[in-house]
Length: 482
View 1 (cartoon, one colour):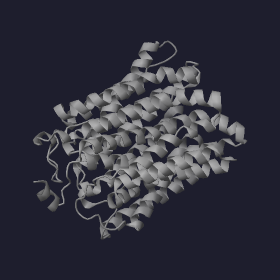
View 2 (cartoon, rainbow, N blue to C red; view 1 turned 120 degrees about the vertical axis):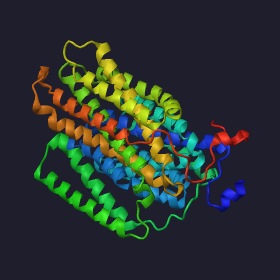
View 3 (tube, rainbow, N blue to C red; view 1 turned 90 degrees about the horizontal axis):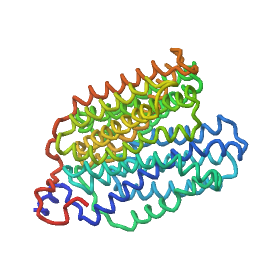
C-alpha cells in the first residue's frame, strides 16, 4: 500500500519520532521569533542611550527587520517547497542565531540596523518552514493540534517577552536580550541538519520565479514601509507616492503571474476559496487584535496613568488566554469544523474590542482584564483554525508558499491595524486627551469583517487531496499523534 502511494507521488506518513522532533522544531522556531520581537521593544530605550542613537535610528531596528521579513516570506516558502523545508529551516535558524550574536557584539547602531535586516531575512526563511515541516510530517486530519501547540507557544512568548526582557535589560544590559536567542537557535538548526527528514513531495515544483518574487517583495516592502510610518508621520506626500508605487508593483506582479510558466503563487492556491477566505480572516483578525492592543496600551497609560510595567501586567490575560484557548480550538476544529470555530473566535475578538472601547478612569481592573482576555481567546481560536485551513488545503508541493502567505498575513495585518487606529485616534475627545472610541470601533468592524469572511470557510474539511491517508485509518502505532 505504501509503495503504491509512493509511486503516485503521495507522501508517506512520517514515523512518530520524526513527528515529535518536527513539532518541537516548529514550536521552538515560532517561539524564538515571537520572543525576539517582544524583548526588542523593551531593549530599545537602553540601546538608544548606550549607542548614542537617534529616535529614528532606533525605530529602524524594528522597521528594517519587519520590511525584510514581510517582503521575503512567500519566496522563502517557495525555497522550502523546492529544496526541503527542514533544510531551509536549519539555514534560517542558524542564520537567525548568528545575526543575534552579531547584534549583541555590535559597536554602533548602524551595525544593529544592518544585522536586524539580516535577521529578518533569516526569520523569513524559518517561519514558513515551521508550517511546511508540519504539513510534511503530519497527515492533514492531524494538523490541528500541532498548529494549536505552535500558537500556544507564540502566546506564551508574547506574555514572557516583556517580563524576560525587562529583567535582562535591567540586570545585564540590552545586549543580553539578543544573546538569549543564540544557543536555542544554534541547537535547533544543527539538530535539523543532523536529522534526515522524509519530505513531502507532490507534483514537481518548477522554477523559483525570481521576477515574480522581486515584484512581490517590492510591493510588500512598500506597503509595510508606508503603514509603519503612519503612526509617527501620518499620511505624507512621500507615503502616498510610495503607496502608489506599491500598487503599481502589485499590478505588475499579477500580470506577470498570469503569464509565468512557473508562477510564484501556484494556480491551485489561487483557485482555493478556502485558502483565500482563511488568509482574509487572518489579516482582519491580526489587524483588529494588534491595533486594539496598541490603542488599549495608549489608553491605559494616557487616560489611566499606568506605567509600562503595570500596563503589561493588565494586558497579561490576553496572552495567557491565547495560549490556553489554542489547544481547545484545535479540539473544536475537529468536532465543529472550521467555519463555526472561526466565527466563534471572531465574535469573541469583536466583543473584547468593544469591551475595551468602554474603558475610562472609572473602569475596574476586572473589566479591563476581561476585555484583554476576550481579545486573546478570540484571536487564539481564529489563528489556529484559519492557519489549519490554509495549511491543510494547500497541495503538498506548495506547503511552503501557503506558509509564507499565512505569515505575510500576520505581518501585514498588525501594521494595517496600528495604522488605522493611529489615523482615527484624533477624531474624538476622550478623558485625559486620549481618543479611543472611533479607533476601537473601527477595529471592531475589522474583526466583524473577519467573521463574515469566516462564513466562506468550509464547515468541515474535505479529504486531503495529496493522497495522505487519515491517521484513524492506520493500525500502526507509529502514526498516532505525539
